[in-house]
Image (tube, rainbow, N blue to C red; front, side, top):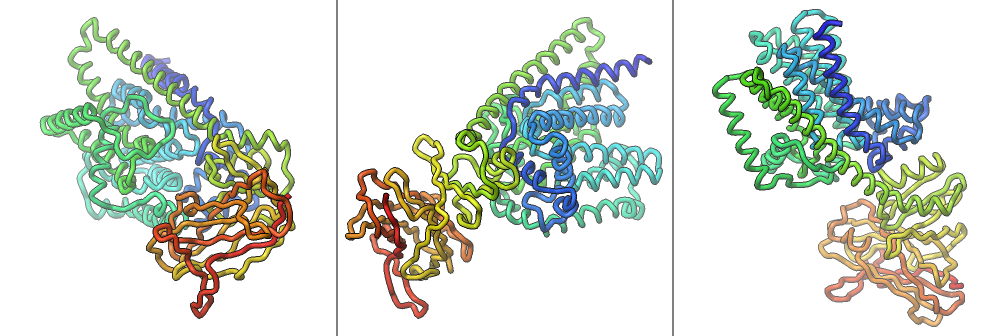
Length: 611
């Protein structure tokens, strides 16, 4: 084997080993959050309907990312619910991206050291750790196809062969089907041809060459826009062009300028990430970059700035930052650091102290990186363990669950979507449905159902749903409450009550027009003689869904847990009375009939028995 080949192999082994050793603590983390969404979706997909479930935009509950859906579908068939296997795959993607970066830089610059240093610096960055440790994140997979597109495009620019053009276009389509950020790739390819390769600009030829890429980006954008989940996510998280984007961009530049440190293995959506020292360093780094660009007029530096900016641009309208969004654009920082190292090597490389000092510095950098990654992974592992506590508590109670079982959670400490839903699916299979107090419960549409509420220590308590609990409401529902609200219906967990078990009442409201004030819900348990046995006054959903924020014509579910004293007298003939009142005046909202006549100031549900 030639010396250059041995050097290349040795460099690749060093980088791969550094990454696997640094990221092996991720094997302690298991699954969390979005991981469960993708796993459950993959597990509920059969080979017979896989194409529709993966490619039909109307069926997507997450972002439209078919390649990622294929990945999870195949992984689930092979690995099942073994989290370590998924983590190893994600780490392997990261290794592939790092080696692809080395190969691309080496190929474009024709400098082996620059390629190796770029990859080494990139491998030691800790800022994007969430993109590697969180198996539900698509960035490592998408970046493989992004870099492959660049590789095949560079080959096409050198060879002019149609085969290489087709490979570049195919890789671009796969990158798009991985993640939306790839829509910026045609501009990056154009800048690579114009700036890096220095080819003269021919408008007619460029239009013909880039038109298929542009059409692919437009077609994908239209499909993405038609996907219902796109509008849901944009509405929930916010995505809007504004002047705030400039500040968000500055915060991302802080991360790009200093990508080492203690970063979380799960994104917490911070608004600010900079501190006075990092802002000072960013200012100094920008000054040095501008001076270098002015002195050298380097197209490489200009290209790297454009590359980082273009790949941050699609995420700037979010009103927060996510560290994983730096996974691709921060490659520009790795190359810049490598250029500094290469420049230093050119000036001092012949001195006896340079090689050992450089090796020691890089080794310390890798070691420090490993310590930071280990601490971050262990912290995330503990956080993920705490999220699994409610599931573990319930799992201990039920070795098995009946087919077609509903588990309904009131104010869960762990999200049901991207959390408990996937946990129970992986443990008990497809017959388990998990819902929370923001949804229609439909308690009696299942073979068995359990309601869970949490005590002051946040431990779950189980209430089996009584299947034949027939009650009636007076006045009959639906009913109009006040001028703006419709009470659409209700559900109860049990009609036969016990002194040691709280009463569970689920109310379904719908705003008919905007509500100006915040009202309070009152619930009373009344004995046959009219005496008040138990009561609870609370804003909807414990104050997390104030009436002034109810969206017009959309359902607002509110699950209420009413404790009953152990000394409450036993007997039949109990009833529930509930309604809304204005806490400013203590005045109850009237219940009116169709013509608008007041018919009551409360709803009564009966009968109940207290045992």
